[in-house]
Amino acid sequence: MRLLKYIQLIPKWYSQVLYQQKKISVTKTDYSSGKSIKVYAKELSGNDFISLNYYITSTSESLKPCEMPSEKVIDFLLNFSLIEISVVMDKIGFGGGCHWCTEAVFQTLIGVSKVDQGFIASTGENSTFSEAVIVHFNPDTIPLRLLVEIHFRTHKSTVNHQMRSKYRSAIYVFSEVQFDEVRQMLKSIQKEYDNNLITEVLSFYEFKPSEIPFANYYYNNPDKPFCKNHIDPKLRILLKQFSNQVNLKKLNI
Image (tube, rainbow, N blue to C red; front, top):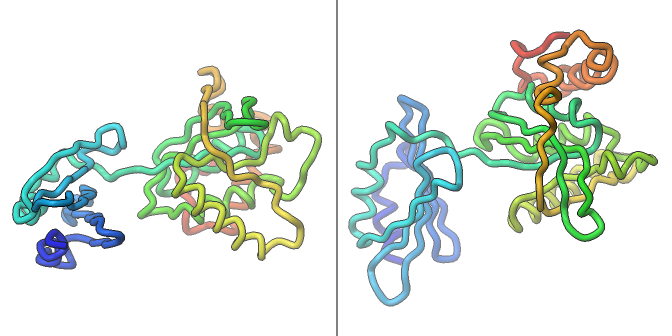
């Protein structure tokens, strides 16, 4: 593949290269600013042109497609301006307990940029809305597996109680790749538990946000009895088991 030849010319300190099934993924990083651009390239059959997709903002909606001769790819990667580039975030949905609690847990973590509190519906028998959050995170700062482990540790992930229709224990994924990754994580983490994890891996279908007065509940109401009795104990679990990932400036315990 001609593209691979050109990609290999880029110094290792300048980019990270993944080559699989005739596809190239390059992360170009400006270490002085910490900003990066992710470029996904696939050679088109029958010619020397490369199909490129690249992020210029932090959301997948800003994916920009283009084509260029393979010999131009190296110049593109080396000269593309990083001034307006921000780190690409990933997202995952979590449900299991009161979404006020779940929101506070993930808001407290380093590497999480935003938590949307509300209700998530999947499909089929799980098409009803259940309390949950969507977590936006930087996978280079906090890996998905760690988020999954934290979710299991901060709600009753082995208890199938009578309130499960309201508090469905689930991880909501946004792609087939993410579905497979989380399923494998669940099988691996299960070995750490004596009882079976009841948490399901479900496809995300729809999100309904909480009413504005209830959003950011813990940080707007840290001294309320509910927060003291139900959320603070979960944050103490974070401090005890995941202290390296906790933003201590956000804690009020």
